[in-house]
Structure formats: C-alpha cells, structure tokens
Length: 138
Image 1 (cartoon, rainbow, N blue to C red):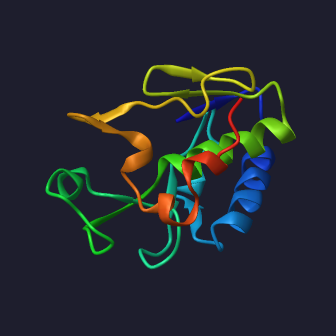
Image 2 (image 1 turned 90 degrees about the horizontal axis):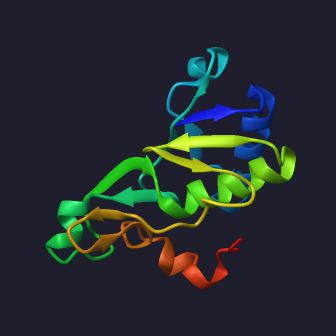
C-alpha cells in the first residue's frame, strides 16, 4: 500500500493505536519502506497465536475451522481499524491499495472478493472476537 498526505509518524501512531485492539500483534512488514517516498507499507502479524492474522483462502474453501492454515498478513479488520486511526490523526491522508483509493470519506470497510465467493471479512478469525457489526462504518 502507498500513503500520501501523511507522514511516517502518522502511520506509526496509527499502528500504536491499532495494537491496543490487537494485543500488540500487528507490525509493519518492512519498516524501512516508511523512509522512502512515496510512503509504502504492509501490515503483518507478529504471531499466529495472536489476534489479527489472515487465514489462507485455500483453507477457507476447504471448510476451515479455528485450526485452519494461517497467513502472516494482517486481516481486513486490522486494515480497516488502521485506516480509521490514521484518518483520526490526519483526515487528509490518502491510501492507495490494489487500485483503490481510500480516504477519510470513502473506501474504508469496503468488501472485496478474496477468491471465488469469498469476501475479505471472512478470511480471518476476527469474527470470533470482533464481529463485523463492531466495525465502525463510515
């Protein structure tokens, strides 16, 4: 993802706030990318045992359970909460991800398909801890 109209400090502060919800389990994949222009980042999980990880979509298609194969990328819920925190810090921030533009006014909490008939909010186990209804929608 690429970020405009914000700073490294804004991204780091948003991550700190998100980690309050996810027990400190979220990090940037490569923090050195925060020093480049344009700002580039990927949200990752530190541990599969913590909150916020993504489930492998193949496991989902095969009928996964809480023991499904896990992927270290942060899930849809983590990203949505991260964007909310970033927009609280800097309402003018703009995120570009997979060809989409996300701003404080639009683009956050938008479902996308992660595979055949799989929507992004269902590719993690957060719905056990963070039901979709809890996600603040814009």
